[in-house]
Amino acid sequence: MQQLIIRRLLWLIPVLFVISIITFTLMHIAPGGPWDRDVGRRQLPPSVIENLNRKFHLNEPAWKQYVLYMWGAIRGDLGPSYQYKDRNVTDIMFAPPQGRPIWESRFGRTATLGLMAFLIAVSVGLPLGIISALKQNTIIDYGSLFFATVGNATPGFVMAIFLMVIFGLMLHWFPIAPTNWDGWKPWVLPTVTLCLGLTAYLTRMTRATMLEAIRQDYIRTARSKGLAERVVIVKHALKNALIPVATVLGPALAGLITGSFFIEFMFSFPGMGRLYIQAVQQRDYSMIMGNTLFYAFLIALANLAVDLVYGWLDPRIKVGK
Image (cartoon, rainbow, N blue to C red; front, side, top):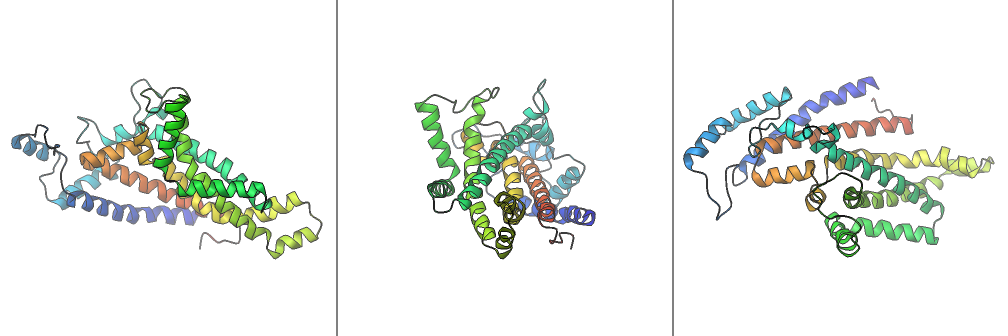
């Protein structure tokens, strides 16, 4: 197991290297630059642009810009932001406002939102899928299938608009785009919107894997031995049924923690996803690179966690091989 962890962590180096090259190339071949302005707005004088390019080394050849950035990233410096004056990307992402706790940083807020959505999705989707499989072709099964189908078919931004109109504009239960995120009410709509898709997917997937598991010969053998139904389901069927589900849980958790771009943007949530969209719109190269590398790192760790969970669910799977 230790060899697996070390080997996968070492694999992070070439993976992040390739991702950084692709991201850097796409950024620089895209039209526009960090000093462009919309038509109709005052444009920066050429002399100012020249000084800014010199300050941020944008006048250097592309290969040198890449080497300079990656050398700083290796040392934990994700570079200066082009749009936030005199601020470092690392501080913008991970430093909380002055006098506030660490979880109120950009990443802290996004991680909190993602963890809450993940816990709700798992605590609702897995039991609902299990019950649906055990009560196949009943009203419970039909209801869960209807929920799973609608949840999977509805895009997140459409669900966000629906919840904002119903619970924000019509019922006035929750704020739509709050400026103050203290208290629990502002978190409800983005959390529910973020978790609905994963909940529906887990419900459908858990139902399918449970139905396959309870039809296996070893389940019939366990029942023929006179074991209690609860023991048969929990000890024998459930563990095997959760192996395919674990495949999606790791990347799903990483995706939720790193933030849903459109959900955060629609609810004006001060997190990483909204920050990333703004960085792309403003061509803030350092911010784009820093966010992308951090996302890739989290997803790689999530895939490693999935491999470790495999070994716990089924010892026959040799994750270290």
